[in-house]
Amino acid sequence: SLTARVDISGGYVLTEKLDQMHKERPLLGVLSAFNNLCALIRDKNSPQELLEIANKLMQDFESDFSVLARLLPKIYALSSQLKSTATEKDSGVQMNFHNVCFILQRFMRVVSSRAHPVMLFLDDLQ
Image (tube, rainbow, N blue to C red; front, side):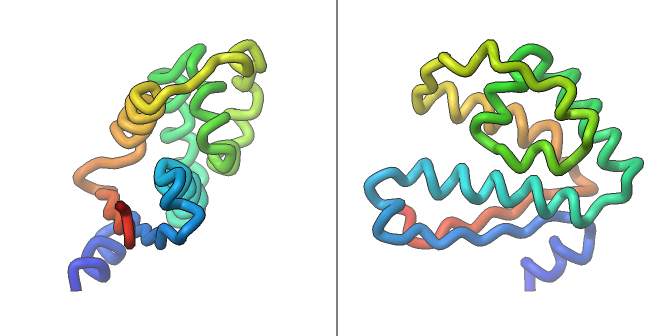
């Protein structure tokens, strides 16, 4: 199956079932899937690879890293180095749909590649 091939090739396969709670706020289900991606990346990579990913995240997000961490708290599981970059200065920033999408796109550019594709199944997205 396609899912098995992506998984075997070093990619990440995520499935998120959006239940009744998510129908009112579907973005929560998407954020949950991306948050789970952080744990999957941690589990499937070596410490050296995780350090490289953490460095790329810090380089790409710079001062916006705390915004990413608000959306994806499991991001800290990738490296202890990321905890030292967290700041609370963005805690008052209001996020809208477009901001969230932009942050998630930037995150995907860092963690996905030809060697590590991401396959995301969102069931019952309406």
